[in-house]
Length: 510
Image (tube, rainbow, N blue to C red; front, top):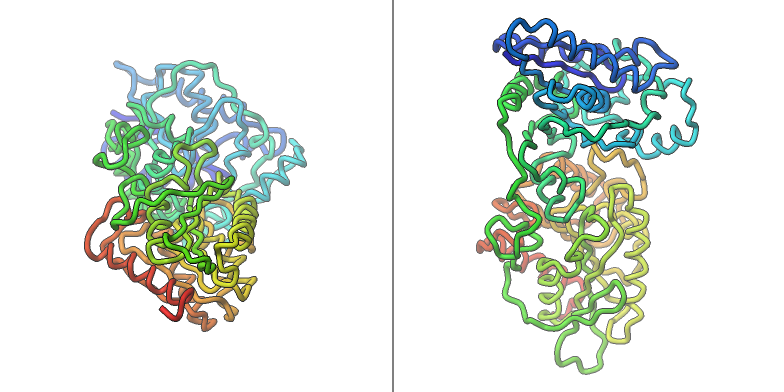
């Protein structure tokens, strides 16, 4: 019989697990929802107290076992993963598996504060560093700041708010200390409406993200639920099914899912696969972080330029860098084949908090492109892909006369709920709602994740309300990053049509 120890996250206690625990019990398992003493004790309680409490639960379950050692699974939600991992470390061999419910991996020496989704709050609390302070629980309408509430019924949200308690800051400030003993196998439950999906995890693996690469090993599995950050409230049945399957060792593995495959191999990530259109194999001109692809036969007349902006986040040190990805190279060469200068660049979007740095890099790159004597400085287009979508906002707002068009392919048009980024400078919907923005071509894929699709829908609704000139090119059967994986006629036609519309803004005489 499996024994599930259900560990709550910030501001919450055992009450959040009641429905899930009932489903597990109905399936023949035992469920132990716990309250962490840090939340009960108030000021002065810390991570060590929460770890010790879970060690006591683990010991009690083993002591109560009459015959064989129990199959004990620790299930932890957001902050709860820190005491869960700490307890498993102190009781090696007694925990069969740790299940992370919509929470990232933890590391030795890192405090739980690092996992808070709100960047500004992390910085303020870290600067204050007052161990006797408490973090007040959210008001009813403020829970989305801590994670998507998608799917949570109104009554459950009322109960969550009514039973929430202040979180002692000391539980967040103290680093997790591990002995180095092997930890049990782990399972991640990804919540798609909070922005975490198997597709994004695999994409990060192919980008070379060291944290994700560490998870590409036997014993680490994943499940995905189409719900928000509180699946125990929004989908207790689905979560219970996933927990039972995780306890049995089931789930998706990242082993052989990426990282070391060559472009063109089966399963290669889209950005590394061969570009879907035949383009001229013209050389690049590398200038710092810029690559230029210049049309042949230039007669000295300056040409318009399209700057292609890669998405991300892409870890620093990833190889190849984005401007060498076949997708970006393919787009730039396609532009050159159409008679305009194609430009790619590497920018510093290495984390979801790095949009300001990436925006500065892009602005510098555009200035350098406009200064090139072969470029018509009055006819520039910017073309954004995937996670660079929020970088469209400053350009939509500035509306320089030389910026003839913006384009975006499968874009993320606002920071996702789980990112904890609330920077008004990078919210394009708020800009287009005011109208008066440059022409915009948006390539929308049909097989998009729900969280990303929601940002696109909100952007288009805002553009419609503001009368902003946004044209949509749909690719109903294509997935995110389709250029290297979907070489169907509809996908090729969509890329050609998007390019035709951008060129129509750059070179109206054509």
